[in-house]
Image (cartoon, rainbow, N blue to C red; front, side, top):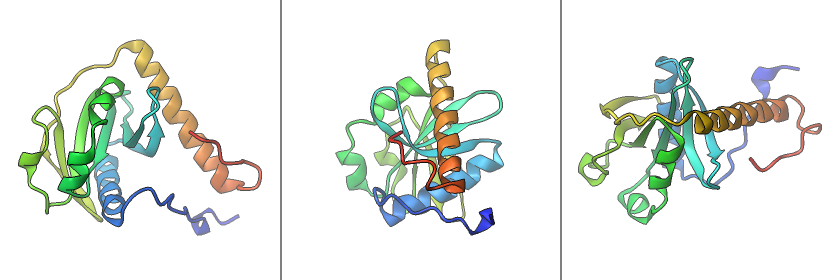
Length: 159
């Protein structure tokens, strides 16, 4: 099987702008040694836009915002802090940085990359929470790869 020919169908939950920001942010994170899983279900039942993991076991959550209205409508982002070491917002250069909460990191992205505008404060996860997040990350990534390799053999599982 030619794995390069496999394509991933978008799940249609994200706007075109959000997909672009996610792509550029994931590329930037990869350059820092992070691997990303998008739309990861958290133990709280929420879904994180991007969860990034590096070889030191650091877990970052990146909440993507496509507009000021998207940020204003979001009442759930504070819950993500309990599931990561650092929390960031990623957005296009069209949005002003001043609208985002002061105690989060800021990433400005386009389809081809991103840059860190403001570092996120660190709040290390408890060991038990880290273990749960590492397992969720690994299992979600493995399930997605298996569905790509053998779509008929691996029914979609709600992650």
